[in-house]
Image (tube, rainbow, N blue to C red; front, top):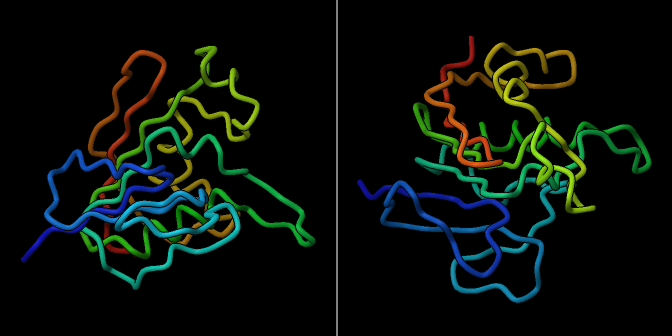
Length: 162
């Protein structure tokens, strides 16, 4: 069976670090290339069916997704996005995040960085499930976590929800 990957916030070029045969991307830009779909993932769902992808990636993207908005009601946009990532991943599928994080200055340089995270954020909220109180409905296990300069690269695996 052919492996499929989805790159969130991909811009005009889809990244495929897992070497999947079928590649798709999502971005909010207008100048989209082949295989790239338009969606604002801060307020919209991922436009693909459940259990569709072997891999989902987010390179320099999660820091742009607000944690909380009032538009007009309170929404936990970041947690809603992670629920969507969990939904579209197949069981045992992998989510790779590559994000500038605190304490590095790069986490703060860009004024569109509205979700400043630390090396504990993804682990605490989506593996240890602190986000349950805010609507988190998934289950991930930590596969790896390492610093690459100012970026933290995290790989999470979709687990069976218990």
